[in-house]
Every structure is written in C-alpha cells, then in structure tokens.
Amino acid sequence: SQFGTCLLLALVLLAPIAGAEEPSNLVQRVLQASAADDDDALRAIAESQRTWLLACSVAEQDVAVALRLAKSSPLPDFAGLPAYLESRKERTATVVMLALAAAERGAPKGPEDRAAHIAACEAALPHADRFEASRLHGSLGQLHGWNEKGRAHFDSAVESARDVGWLRGVAELLAVAGNTAFGAGDVEGARTRWTAWVTAERRRGALGKPWDPLHNLAVIAVEVGEYAQALTTLQELAEVLEAGGPTMRADLRHILGSLAYVHGLRGEHRSAFRAVLRAAELTAKDDRLAWADSQHDLGGAYLQLGQFENALLALESALTAIGENASKEAQALKGHCLGDMGRVRYFQGDYEGALEVLAEAR
Image (tube, rainbow, N blue to C red; front, side):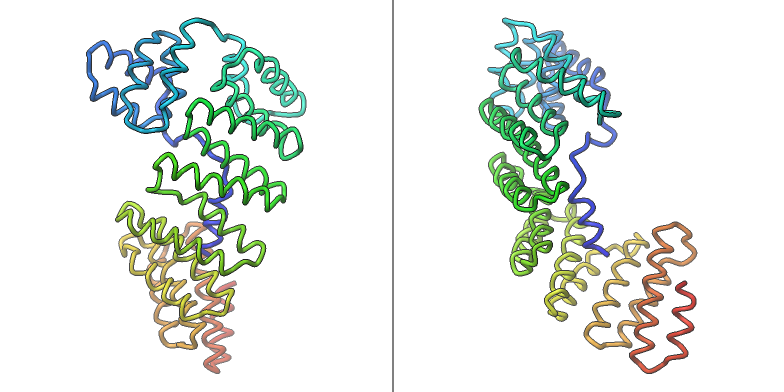
C-alpha cells in the first residue's frame, strides 16, 4: 500500500507551491524591504521563493531592486539571474510576457485553446532571450506532448536554462519531461530524463530531498523487472532521507514501504520485514491512521514469515487505531486489515473464523 501511494506521488507533475503567496503581494514585500534597506528580509524572501520568476516580476517595476533581490540569495540557482536582469534594462518583451502568461494559465481547455497557446509561444520565441526561451520551450513541450516536436522543445528548454545558469529550471524541466515520457509509455525516455534530473539536483546542491527523481527511477526499475536496481536506488534514497533527520521521517516511511514491497517481489520476506519494522518504529502513535497503516504492513510482513500470532496482534492493533474513523481511507484500510486477518485464520486452520472475518471485510 505504501508503494502504491509513492507511485502515485512520483507521477504527479510539478505543481505550484501549496498556499503560495499572491505574486503581487510578494512584489510589494520586495519593494518595501528594499526601500527599508532590509537585507535580511530580502534574503528570506529569496530563499523561500522561485526567485527567477519573482525577480522578473519585480523588474517590471524596478530593475535595480530586482537585481538586489537576485544578489541577496546565497543559492547557486540564481547565478545567471543578475546578467539576465541587466539585459532587460535595454529592451521590452511584451509579446514574450503575454505568451508566457497565456501558457501558464493552466492546461488548455480544448484543441482550439491548445492551438492558441502553441501559436502564442511560437510567435514569442524570436523575441525571447535565453531565459524566456527556456520557459516558452518548456510550455511548448507540454503542449505538444511526447512526440518529436515535444521532445525537441523539452531539449531546447533544458539547454536554454543551462545557458543562463537557471539550475532549478533545469531540474524542473527534466522532471516534467520525464513525467511526460513516462505517461506516454516511453520508459527509457523517462529514465534518461529522470537520471539527468538527479544529476541536476545534485549540481544545485539540493541533496536534502532528491525524493522524486530517485523514487521515479526505482518505479521504472520495478516496471521493467530490474528489482536489484530498484533496491539499490531505494536504499540510496533511504540513506539520504535518514540523514535528513526528523523532517524527512514521513518520506522515509514511504521509501521503507517501497523497499519492503520490492523485497517481497524477490521473495526476500525477512528483508521486507526489517524494512516494515523500521517504518513502524518511525510512525508516531498519535497519528492514528499512519500508525494503523504501519501496523497493517507489519501484520502482512509477519504473515509472509508464517508468524501468525504476531500477525494477528499487529492487525488487531491497526483495527484499534482505526476505531470509529469513518473516512474513506480509514474504511479501505480496515477492509485490508480484515482481509489479512481472514488469511491468517485460514492458514491457522480456523476456517469458520476466516469466513466470519472475511464476511465483515465485505
């Protein structure tokens, strides 16, 4: 169940930061911090936002302040940003910004809307500098999909982002290209882009949570039956997350669940049990649903080892934690627990008990 959850997460396209502040409010905060000569406030904003895009918005009102914001960030992602902003002093790019605004409104609502987005981006490309071109090519890659044109646009987007030193953009574009390839069934194309994504994240120093690219590569390895490679990748990711401390604990639990799943595919039930047990140890009891999920996984691992009494204890612990929780997720988990309890009863030779529990699971 953990691996299924991780698989879904791994295939979601990059989305805007949840609860992100309105761009106009951020621009005003930057302008106010600059006017107050508050370098600490500027640095805090630069470290918490997508500084490339924010700085471009600030530059619409005051290029000097945008330059100050860009230079306040210690991260390597923005090394090429000051030079880009300097170039904007000498020109206007209204057609480009209009095309980008159209492309970033969201998914096209139909074929005509898609065609209009494509036309706007293609018309803007001759007027764009390299940073803008990377964004336009990225939009065109998504609009065309994983065909010859789409792949060419994604490759051009990554090349342009590298040229201007937009390291975060390189990583994000490779991520979206890999997702698009995987969604189209091109496993090797996805593997190539996601492997480059890992390299890009390491190059920009984002080793705290390279969760998505490494996990996606493990997903591909499982898809093509390369279980040993999947285990190697997941173990590498588990080590990175373990080193990340308590803030990475939830992600680490998911990865340990994936490790258990792959060990199970290889018939390595003791190794699967150790991964599940470690995940259970990391789960706080006051998070009752997460605790129930970990106990369910533990019960399944005991079942695979033939330790039926321990399996029943873990599954009963899971059901106790679920209690009267009527949510869809809790009820689905309850059904899984009861199903596994029925299997345990069956293997114990308690056929009546098995039928009784399985009837409740329905």
